[in-house]
Amino acid sequence: MFAQDADRSVTLFQNVRIFDGKGASLSEPSNMLVRGNKIERISTEPIPTDRRADTKLIDCGGRTLMPGLIDAHWHSIMAAVPLNVLMTADVGYLNLLASKEAGNTLMRGFTTIRDLGGPAFDLKRAIDEGVIPGPRIYPSGAMITVTGGHGDFRQTFEVPRVLGGPLTRTAT
Image (cartoon, rainbow, N blue to C red):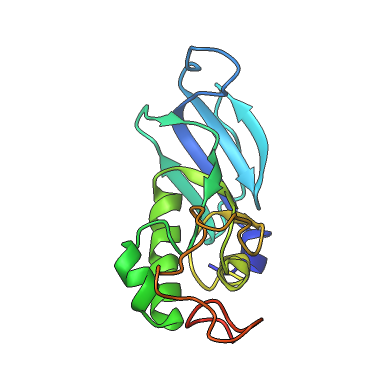
């Protein structure tokens, strides 16, 4: 489903127990009507809905529904990639891996993440446009680190050949 289609979608969750994050207990079995990406109504009584062909009715079987989780420190490109692959693979391959991990992250319940360093802007765009599934991304852009810090990926042999020259094989 593309993002613009989500604005018109109608979903009715039936027989669901709701954890709202304000207390420790779950609600009584309830119904929740979602229009677009907004919760329109929650009730323990049946909610009348337009039974259009595109209206989704989901019987939750008494399962729990809760707000999406937020991860405040995530790296889309590095979330599930070993360092040796990160340092040697083509950026296109890394973006494909990041796309897969974004979908996995969403399925773990994280609906929003803050990317604290790395090229996440194109991944964010693809998710926002509905091209791929994934959480909302708030990207920071380039990593800030000190020499030798956790964002300094230079090898010990990578030193400038000339004064003011590039510091790594990836710098130009």
